[in-house]
Amino acid sequence: GAGVSQSPRYKVAKRGQDVALRCDPISGHVSLFWYQQALGQGPEFLTYFQNEAQLDKSGLPSDRFFAERPEGSVSTLKIQRTQQEDSAVYLCASSSTGMRGYGYTFGSGTRLTVV
Amino acid sequence: GENVEQHPSTLSVQEGDSAVIKCTYSDSASNYFPWYKQELGKRPQLIIDIRSNVGEKKDQRIAVTLNKTAKHFSLHITETQPEDSAVYFCAAPPDKLIFGTGTRLQVFP
Image (cartoon, rainbow over all chains, first blue to last red; front, side, top):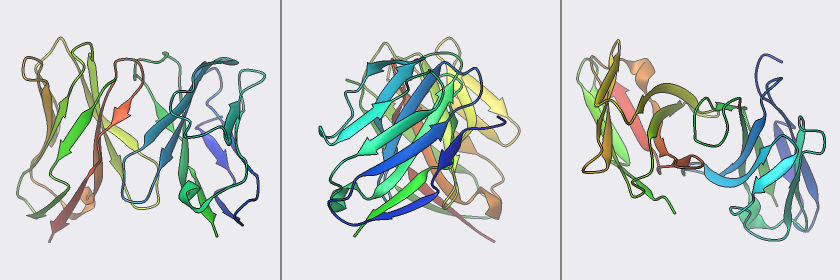
C-alpha cells in the first residue's frame, strides 16, 4: 500500500477486556515496530519484527502485551485484560532498512481508551 | 540503553522569529539523528535527519546541527510560520529509535 495502515483508528475497551490492534505496513518493508504514545509524551518503543521474527520485545510493559507477525507482513498487537494505564495511542512504523532508525514511516495510530 | 533528553518542553515564538530545540543522547554508538513533527491527532512525520559523518544539514527553513563530541544535536527553524506549530520530537538509535519527550512549538501570528 501507499502507507502504513492501522485499524481500528479508535478503540474504547472496558477494563479487563482483551483488544487486538492491527498494522498493515508498507509492502515490502521487512522491519516493523510498535510504539506506545501516552498523552503529552514521546513514542515509547514496544517491540520490533524483522519479517516474521520478533527480534526485540524489551519494551513490552507486561506479559499482558503480545505481538505477532506470522507471515512477515501484517502485525497484530494484543493486549489482554486491559487496564486504565494502557490508554494511549499505539503507533506502528515500518522500514525497509532495518533497526537502525532509518526510513521509518509511521501509521496514524490506534487511540485506545480503557474505561 | 540509549537515553534522549529534549529541551525545552514548550516554546512560543512570534511569526518570523527563529526557534531552536536541543537534544542530548547518551549512547556514543548512535549515528543517525532524525527529527519528527507531529500535529495534533496525526502521525509523526520525518522532517529532517542527519548522519554522524556530517555536522550540519539544511533544508529550506529547517536545519539540524550535530556535535558528536558533546553528544547533542539541535533543530533550527528560521522565519517561523503559524503552520510550524506542532510537537517536535528528536530521536536517536543505535538499534531502535528512542524518542525525546517532545517540544510543543507555538508560533503566534
